[in-house]
Length: 437
Image (cartoon, rainbow, N blue to C red):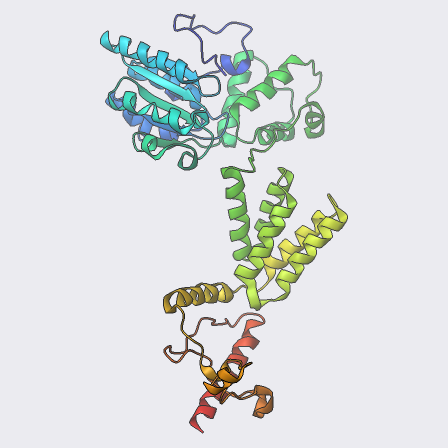
C-alpha cells in the first residue's frame, strides 16, 4: 500500500526496489481490474469522470480490491489535488490541518479530493466533523471501508455520499494480475497449471495478497515448476475474511439459516464449514441451530430440537475437533427435516392477540375455587373434567366470554404435523357435536 502521508512533491516514478504490488499499480482507471461495473463507461465512476465532476463517495469492498488506487486515479482523472489520510493514525488535529490546507488551495482555484482510508474507524463525532467541509465544497470526500457503511457510518454522512461497492477480484481479474507480473518481470511463474489455479484460489479475491505471494515466488530459486503440494508447502494460504462481530459473521449465519430453511444440506454444510474454519464459536452456531429447529421445523419434526440440544451436549463433552461432527449431524438433520413455521407463526399471532385483548377474564367454569367466597361467586361452576367425558374430551369453552375463539396454530401437512392436524380436526368435530347436543 502506498504511504498515505507522502508529501505531494515526491517523485511519481516507482523505485526499482519497490514491492511488486506498487510496480504494478494501475496508472489509469482503465488499468484497474475487476471493477468494470464502476470504472467502465457505464459505471458510476466512469460517468463522473466523463462529466468532469466528482461527488463525495464511499468505496466499500474487501481488502486488496483497489480502493486506494481508484481514489488516487480518480483525483488525477478530474484534475483534483489528492490528500490522503488514514483514520487509524489521524485525529481531530490532523483533520483540522487538512481542512485548513484545502481551503487555502480552494482560494487558489485548486479543488481537493480527501481520501480517508478505514473511514469507519473514525468515531461518530469525528465523522460529523466532515459534514460542513463536504457541504461547502472545501473537500470532496472519498472514504474507503471494508465494513458495511450502514452499520459503521453516520446517517448524515451517508446522505451526503454515494456508496459504491467494490467486488472481490474473481479468477479472471486475478489472472490478469499474474499476466502483468510475468510481463513486467519477463519470467513465467514457476508453477504447473494446477498450482497456478491453487495460487489464484489462495488469494481469496485479494489482489495485493496475490502479488505479494508472486513476489515471494520470484525471490526464491525454484529450479522446476511447483505442483499444488509444493506450492502449499512453500506459501501460506490467506486467512478467510471473517470478523465475528461484523458483517461477514451475519452474512454467513444468514446464508446458513436460509440454506437450512431451503432444505439444501450441501449448501448448509458449506456455510457451516466456512464459519467454523474461520474461527466462529461453535456454541454460537449450536444456539442458532436450536433456534432454527424451533422456528423453521417445529412440530413437523419434534426431534429436531432434541438433536440440536444433544449436539450441544456432545460438543461440550468431546470438545474440538471431535465434537464438531455432532454439529454437522445436527445441521444435516435440520436441513433434511420437514419444515414448518406454524408454531412460530402461532406464537406471533397469539402474542398480538394477547396485547390487543388486555386483561379479559377466563370463563369462570375453568377457574379454580380454593376459597368459599370464590365458590360462592361461581368459580369452577359447571366445569367438566375431560377424563370423565366420552373420548376423554368435554368440548368446553375455554375462551373469555367477550372474545370469539381464535385459530393461532395451523399445522401443515408435513411430517409429524400432519398427524397433529388430524387430531385438531377430530377435536373440532367433537366440540361442534357436543355443543349441538
